[in-house]
Image (cartoon, rainbow, N blue to C red; front, side, top):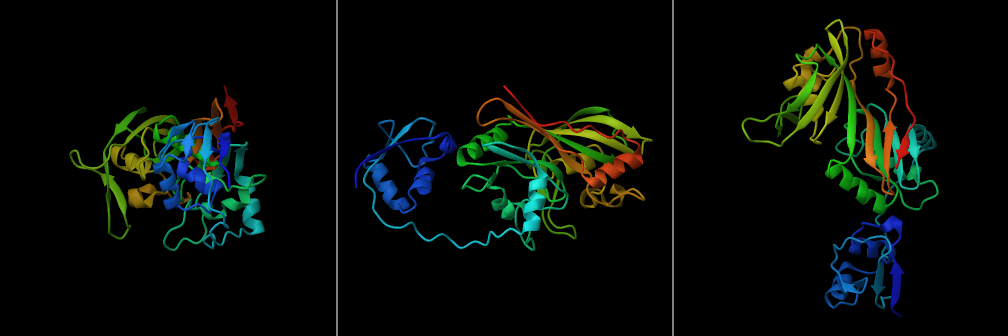
Length: 326
């Protein structure tokens, strides 16, 4: 057993030091690592470090002699992905490089598991490892019934940097929605605080908060087209990322529920002869790329929204290829 020195590679950049050790030395317990940190045996660029120290590419980690032994048995997880599901996932790919995979999530596919949810995106990500040993990681979410662009990070460093971009509002998200009715104004900013409300036949809902209760929620909106006043194509840009923010803002602030959104619009959210599926689509994302520059990805509309566009006479949108600038 000897002292080692290892350089932090790009894939591990911005990882916590304790997570870096778990990844590279799984036989080392958290308690043993904490003792080494307290006594100064583990150092980063020659300096003492804490378990939550964030690593940077090119830093050198001093590793004291470690206990030998096999890695602990991993918790058994069933990650078998059927050939059919794997093929469907690959067909969702809009963009892929060493750091990021962008998917066009279909309407109705949950992003993560929950009560009575057996099939979800997170449970199938092993099918998207390709040449990497690590499975991709989710860095943000979409509602089950919202379609469109969702990003996956292909390593820990990329996951950390992308998550920071979403937290810091450096990621710009653009949604398209068809709403029932026509807003009073062609565009503007909605600033309405929201609060979760449990119970009732519709389950947990998000509602406008009274006074200064709830959480701050801001959405910018603009009208793209109007179909004889009974439906409007809106472009929505959430400046905050609250649960069901766009759905509540359209129904409560604009008094124009999103087409198909019975949860927040009731019967008023449906139009005769048109799909009852939610007409909300994460059309585009612009985000700082973990390796530099900016990545811009656009997702084609799902089938039910394309059909509604044709019925309402909205111009069929052009699909643009992803691009990385800078």
